[in-house]
Image (cartoon, rainbow, N blue to C red; front, side):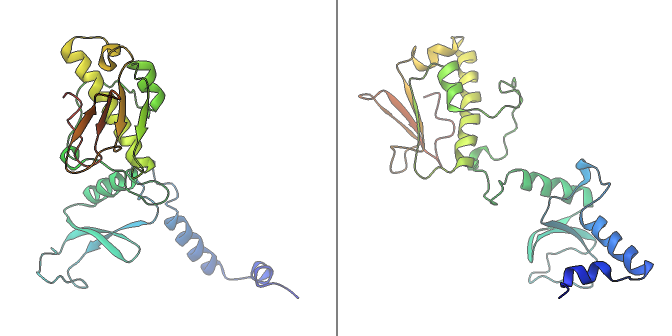
Length: 216
């Protein structure tokens, strides 16, 4: 018995067949396309010529570009292909391998940091909080996935460094010389943005409303 795979390997096809399949594969894998110009895997950018598309409210403009993922249209009406590429690259950057979107508090979604880069591009860990500020411990809530946790750690670290700089105090003073603990999305309830537990000396910031509460 000869398997289909072996049979296909042994089968001699035309040069045109090879050229067509080779070209299609190279195009699919974006061979020789620079990293800055590559479309993230699983996404595609299309041109709307106005002949094969329609929208219920006629708000899909001809002569524009749109982004898809599988059979889903993610966004339309990009004036240029470059604008569509930049948007989809930013979208893909915020997703992990499982397709989960990294959580960013809504009120901070469009904030661009211009102050000193305290992290130097490094993802912050809980150990950074212990070493830099001297917190005696930290905690995450059960509903915080890994992306949520990383975003909270990064933004919280930068916020605390800014706070120490604005108050002209040392980083260790932020945690009252090791007496304070911090929690993200844990121990809270209701619509509170943050709360402090005096008996346990813990400050907690909620997942959805806690942004901007560290200074309180």
